[in-house]
Length: 121
Image 1 (cartoon, rainbow, N blue to C red):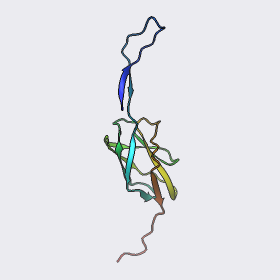
Image 2 (cartoon, rainbow, N blue to C red):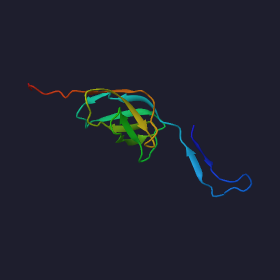
Image 3 (cartoon, helix red, strand yellow):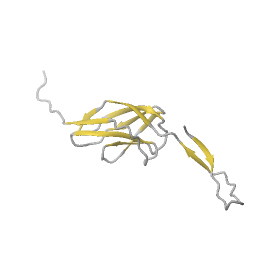
């Protein structure tokens, strides 16, 4: 549950009265990712569904240990992540609303070898 509260400082007798608000937002939650695979060259997109996604310029997607990439906020229940270039293998995909605190969903994402077209009929 999110909310806000006024933050004031004081010495126990006299307190500030400037009305600064501390805003707490519920952390994002991932419920599904589609697709769950992409080619290692990247360049495609992944739709992440869940809840508590915020419309900020700090929404990021982290594919394993790769540098996080900016996500496109679609709604509070969906963001779209551009798939970066990677090595073949499995990674976790996590989302952050603030560029610092990420989900702990453990959602698996797989990077596949690029397939070469050998013939067209």
